[in-house]
Image (cartoon, each protein chain N blue to C red):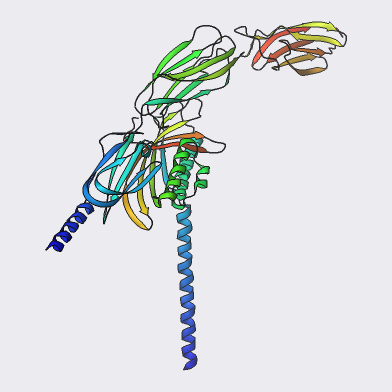
Length: 283
Length: 183
């Protein structure tokens, strides 16, 4: 009689575990421990399959504890309990609180006063590098080399917030940053002079012909165009048309040209044309 | 009589050999096809912003995303982390590397039977250096422990994907399942 009862009990437990149901929590958060309730009793194997996680252990029904380090990645998890048969259930682990920012700022060098030339994209992550999908307020800030900082807030969508900025009128390094709470990321964008503006040349008689040089080359905001920028001098005289390229050195570009008879000399840098000189016929 | 029997036997053997060759050839062909088959990927870029996706980029994204899924399935099937190098980077690669390490440790194996992917481009950064997409994937997922199938299901899974350009292709930087993604 006793043996029969034991066998019946074992049978009951076996059937109970075989049909065990798993009840995960309604809401689980990355890195936070929780329990999954199993309706079955007796021994079985529990599996937890996640985006970067596979756990496997023996359990005895009842409440199955899941440690925080088993659910650090946000996403869909599958909990499986196997005895004679396997039962599976899915649940979603949401990201933890936003605590990291990844900031992309482009370009690293930009001409001054260029409209919408700088873009900054911020990705909002939690401490486990999960993209935080719920809307978050991201504060973007630009600190120019001179003048006051400019701030603008954007709300992230699907973990992403972005902004477009116009570069300052003065050259120099500008700091572009994004912050969320106490977390801030900063990048530096070098603002360089734009194209030359009011490009002017003058001719000075020299020992080998005519020396042609520019006035100090600046952009329209008064910033010096960087040394090395090429300036093209074009001479048209009775011998034909000749173009000579010269880099700017210490703010000025300079060439020596031999001229036969009346000549015209013009200057250009990039897409900008300067003034034209007419020479009467010096050697 | 004996000669006739021999002839019949010889012809039967030849027929059998020819049949075997045909069967082997079709089997090999199906294996080769299975190994090289890419999942179907469709991209809808109608609602993307702030930058529009160029036609060539659109083709590259679908091609590279399909390749990413194929290499991920192969890497998980064969426990080979090196296969991830081609199309994964950043957090996505870290997570999959960790998953493969845990597969090796636990003896559990995840197998994806990849059906189709419908991609919606959500965000393309102004400078073209990051793209976020939503993928509605039709997948078969099988979980094995040793030789035993412990879970098997077919269904639709939604992913949020972050891709960034590499030297000659787009790489998956983050791949996360999500219950709902707002457009």
